[in-house]
Length: 170
Length: 455
Image 1 (cartoon, rainbow over the protein chains, first blue to last red):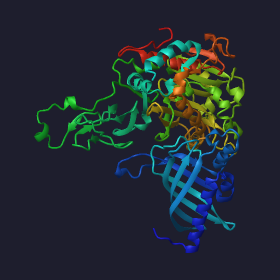
Image 2 (image 1 turned 45 degrees about the vertical axis):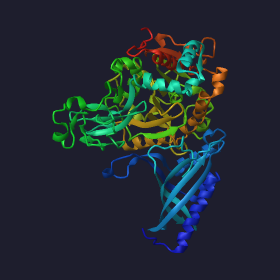
Image 3 (image 1 turned 30 degrees about the horizontal axis):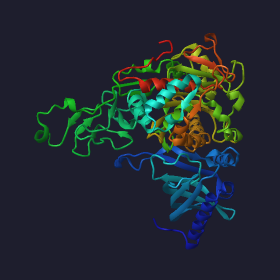
Image 4 (image 1 turned 90 degrees about the horizontal axis):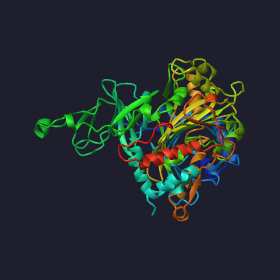
């Protein structure tokens, strides 16, 4: 709940999140991967169901829409670099809106960051956007003078995903 | 506007020439008729029995656009119940899955047990004393049955039994799901996502549209996600297992050729495969199989093949995905995608199979993320005025007499049932879907088209 970091650290994290969004919105996926993601990253988008209140928030522990390591993220980046990545060629127009940033120290040069995320996506001549809304729970690790993404859990506000694929990064 | 009758007549007239009217992929009248004549009558996939292991376990599923509760009752039987209270038609199951002893309507409080019986309502004596509870249970599917744990239901009391309906497809389901005494289970609830496409695009693709791999999915070879070169992968058999149900095998011509066996399942798992539930000949076909892809009419598809989500670090491993193409309108489909694995795999093998499947054949997977792109525009073509005005027919001629290299396979060469052709450069598997489709769509209530090629 409370922000246990200095305002300097907080500003650094917010700047990091904005820089990250810029790379993803601009399709600079390889730069994002190589400069902002830690080699031991765990990157997951768990599957969610509608369940009764007594059973919790409906997120599953062992099933996902995305369950990625650095290697599989790199395979996705490589795929989009081929001449046959139809899902993103022509590319989607993408905008990451990041708000409600909360930062806590997690020890061992790690920061725990929570943020709200709204992704606005259109393809071809679509006028109605595809919208994805959710919370990101990240762990950033500091090393060699920079922060990198060590863990990301994307908790979407959807059980049925209203986009035709997930060829994008969160 | 063209009616369903117009388009079905064009289909009936054109199919022997490999012509399918594009309007089938977008016409609203066709869609309304599909809901009644296909989804209101055929055996449709509900889920896997491993999702309902304990008494009281339930999942909310669909037949056509309508919600049904699949629930294991106190006697251990599985019921498929229409999710609508007998009193005013209100939804009584408001979660996707769970475990319960009863379903209570939120409107007036009618309560049903897990077998669908009405067991009470608030202030029963004042409100309903003297009324028979017996006739007021939840409505239910006419028939429910399962095959290798795959649970199906039909709303049509005149439907043939599930084994009769599956026909020759049972032989092929055996050699994917019955390879040992343990069988398979699903790994968690289904992934669900919506595509602005017609449901038949998924169904006909999984009948055996292997030809699209070379173009649409070319990227997966470039990143090393799939171990069999495109040209080699086009070798194999196309099987019309019985009317409506089709499948396709990528397979070496002889058992001696190197390459993945048993769909790329781990060697330790393959060592447990035996003839406890299948014949020696089925086991032989499974051993030679690199890929199996198929569709059970109308909208249930299966796929097994070696895959990896990270070719740099993990070799491909056999995965199984099963999915339904759930209709949401003439131009929209909801995909329900489950991953399966054999119950006797190790935790590591299980995790590998899950990650490899998720990273390739899911909405975020390297294979599947491209599929929606063409399917969306097929739907657009299907509902276009231009298609109607120009009498636009889609070309399903590959592998017809005199076209391409496809050849019929002698029954001595192939031990399984159905109409079988060598090489996967062939679209008879899709024509088989559309031929049965045309017959179901024009059949009178209570009347069933032939379920065997010789019948």
